[in-house]
Image 1 (cartoon, one colour):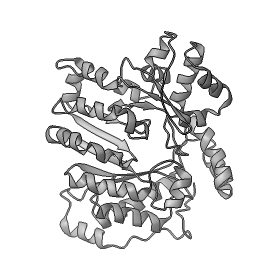
Image 2 (tube, rainbow, N blue to C red):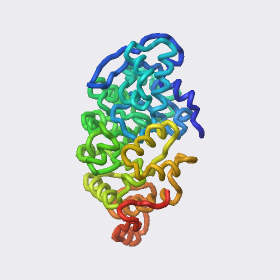
Image 3 (cartoon, one colour):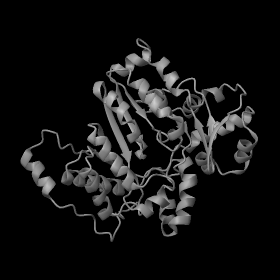
Image 4 (cartoon, rainbow, N blue to C red):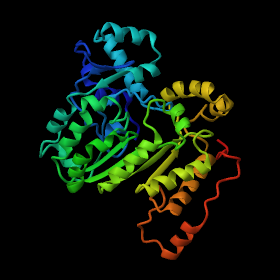
Length: 371
C-alpha cells in the first residue's frame, strides 16, 4: 500500500493544514535547539497513513539526535512551509526557515505535540471505532518517525503522558522504537501496560564503536548507555530487543563488530535482534550523500552509484547481510527476522546451527558485497 504523503503531512500537523494563522509559540530552548508548541487535533495515525499494518504515534516532529541517515525530515519541512505560508512563525523561526538548510532545521527546531495525551485519551474512549480496532488486534507503534525519548521528553514528558493513557486500556498491542536510555524512567508505567497488554521495546543500536556512533549519530546517547538501559528494562520483565538498523554499507557493517554487538545485547537480555541495510529515500539522500562526501569520501562514488536509481542497497548485499545476521542470531540464541529460538524446530538441527561458527565473507574488514 502506498502512503499518501499529503495525508501523512496533514495528520502530523492538522492545525497548520487548516491554516488557522496562529503562531507556533516557543516553549523551551536548549543550547542551539528551540522547542515550539504544536497542539494536535489527532495523534493516532491509521494504516492508511503509515502505509503499514499498524497505527503510529509520534509525540515530536524534528529530532535533536541528528542521525545522518534519518528519513523523517520531509514532514518537518512541510510544517515549516505551512507555518511560513500562514504567518505562524516568529522572527527567529522565519529567519531560520529562510537561511538554514532544511536538514539542520529538522534538528534545531522541534515541534512538540504537548496536548497529545489528552487527544489520545479522547480518541481511545471505550466504544470508539479506533479503540475497537486496537483491542481486536491492531498494533500501536510509538516513534515511527522521530524518537519519542529525544532530549525534549525530559522536559515535556509527552511520551510518558501517552503511555499513561495507554495504561488505562487493556488488551492492546504496543511497540516503542527509541535509541535513548531515558526509556528507563518510565519502567513503572511500562510495567503497568505490560501486565494487561502486549508490549515490545525496540532499542536502536547501529554500532558499538563509540567514536563511530558519534560521527553517525552526533547527539544520540552512547551505545554503552543503550545496552545498560536494555538490561534494566529486561530485568523488569518487559520484552526488549535491538534494531540494528540501518546497517550502513562500508561503515557500520564490520563483521567482528556486528558479532560483538549481537553477543553483548544477547548477554544483556535482548529478546530479538533485527537488521536491515540502509534505505535512502529522496529527502534522506539530500542529507546523507553530502555527509558521506565529508566523512567517508572514499565511499562517495559507490554510494552515488548504488542509490542512483533505487532507495535500497543491492540485492546481493542485502541477502548477504540477512544470512549473516541469521547465523548470528542462531549462535547467540536471540530472535531474528528468520530465526526464533522458541520455535518447534528439530532440537538437534537447532543445536548444530547454534554451534556452527559464524564466518563473515572474506572481504577484509567489511561486508563489502556488491552494493
